[in-house]
Length: 310
Ligand code: GDP
Image (cartoon, helix red, strand yellow):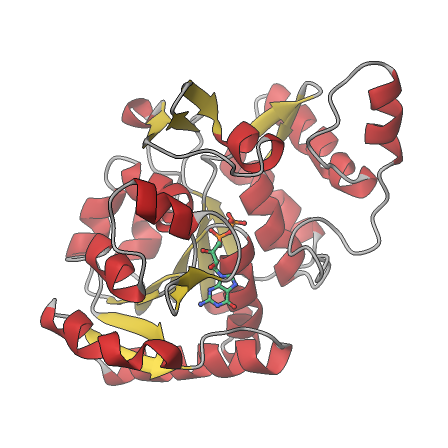
């Protein structure tokens, strides 16, 4: 089994490649629910849904989130009734949220909801929410604290992040299957996701970090930072304001003690000796996942290097 800790867009690009090069039934994805949000009375799980859509081949390739060809009639109509329009939820995306919310309200636990959705999308891999309990990523900026989606979508990340907290995490238990998927895996891959708000909440669920520290699996991380920049999203800005060096080396330091093999982009070749000095092996390759072929090739290289690192 190959277990992947996943956020949204960066993770799902990698997963699209991985499912081409290994049997999808052997893939377990632990998905971040820290950026789940309630909108219009509905439970929205942005990262989990990006992963489901991407693995099903239905994700909008231009945005990396939402469904290809989706329309926005419902949120447009809601705006006429005075609702805020900042959260772009497509009509078919909304159907997922209605279905999920209905099941949660009838008492179905989140892991069963997600397993059902994965089946409905025809997936054979396992998608595990990190926890069934509510955890909410909160961002503190210069003027106080706000929920992650407000920072990410409403403010378009135009805010200096001073600190990040995961409300509810102390009381959260790893979702059913999460610890087993770490303990029993052949390899565990930290996807090229935001280390603070995508991988961070997963590692913050009590027991998860310890399971990663003690697993016999080869542990791999892929840098989401290439040549000192993000491909997309606020990770680099967060690294700056939170006091980290904005580079693949900075990411490797965040994962120190949790990773055996660190994957850096070829543009960051010069950083490899410094990453190795932290006690990790390195794989230097083209990590820019610009095409389906490149996604598959990267996944093939990562899996081969991890097997070689045993
Ligand atoms: P989010 O929750 O939707 O923001 O998605 P993730 O946390 O999974 O991914 C965001 C991270 O993915 C960003 O820091 C990006 O730099 C990184 N990313 C996106 N595409 C690529 C890519 O093609 N290669 C690499 N190495 N990183 C990528």
